[in-house]
Image 1: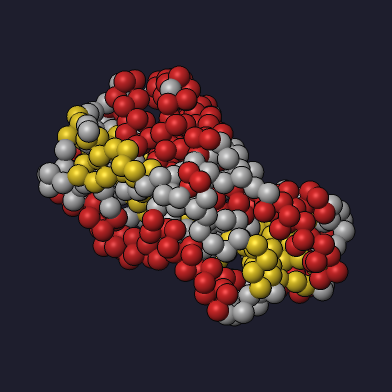
Image 2: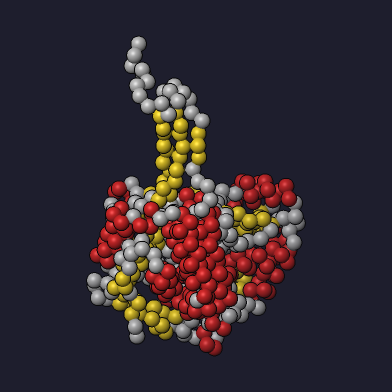
Length: 493
């Protein structure tokens, strides 16, 4: 079986360790690929290549914005040309249904197109300033940060890569990219595209391996000017601590335990449909998942009965068969999800449906969990406090708007939240009070390249996507010009 390797300074190369790692299809537990398993020395080589490309060669950062945009558009076109292959790759690697992977590929191509357009638009500003020093002119300009290390999770392998690589490259940085060791295949394909379109050597570097072995060096290195990470809060805290050494710029998009608030006047069927998307889409392996449903007490029984009916009817199976829900990404994540379910039972939550590993038919060897609903949950339960990252939802009730808001904010996280009501004024009031970076009204989970994405509190800081996503990878420089050279008589009395 051919080994997929790192891409450093425009060349494909194996890890200095010589070690390889198996890539597993979570639908059946079978090995589908081998990838090189990097160590710190590989990361150091990638950082050195990026540093030389940015500070010594400077070919990419000095390239005019429209020319960089042209290359980003060629990347988008190449992603679209390989769309079927990339979708299959992510489905086999991650376990998600094929139609969801196809949407991810389309969104990834659109992300590169968006930033190709954005980098050609006006940036910076001109300022009217006082004449205390004589006639002066002041303006600001945006410049790339430098060497950027980008680390992404396993739940959206290609899409998360695009979210970070597209703006980082658009801004003119040199990058070192480390995908999750669990789902590395589409990242390798993406770097094949980078090579194909002719990115200057060292501008984009790929390191395959685990966080402790390969990622820690990216966070700690004084030659890295910025690190951005999407993943668990615990890992994000470790990265932030390691980055203090040279006070590098840090962007973190971390965990969530997001509330989905449903009032009695909401359209019940619509709320059920969107709640399912909120918690069962991508097997619940979504940082913004609406995994806490807060529902007005008077409609709780009807809502839960209908939600359970829909959940029990969901098809579960290998992603290539395009079921309603695919496999959990790995054996380790499967055990984590099942552990959360068992603790919820022990702590007194009422299991409405699911709650077990799904092993019927061709799912017997895979990592599948039935869609799971817990009712009668209380704030002290782990199922309400901790991120599960699986198809598991906790139901709580409220009796007033004020109580709903208090419950929604009763979490250390602040990534996302939803509100369902036909009262427009109340929807706006509640959304304004929810302490979260991404919110929805009468829907849940739609995401757009044009709008900023990120969280409050322990869900991290910084933003992906939108104009804010480009600004993350830029520094702002102030320039002041004396329009009347010569002495100004400042010290003359």
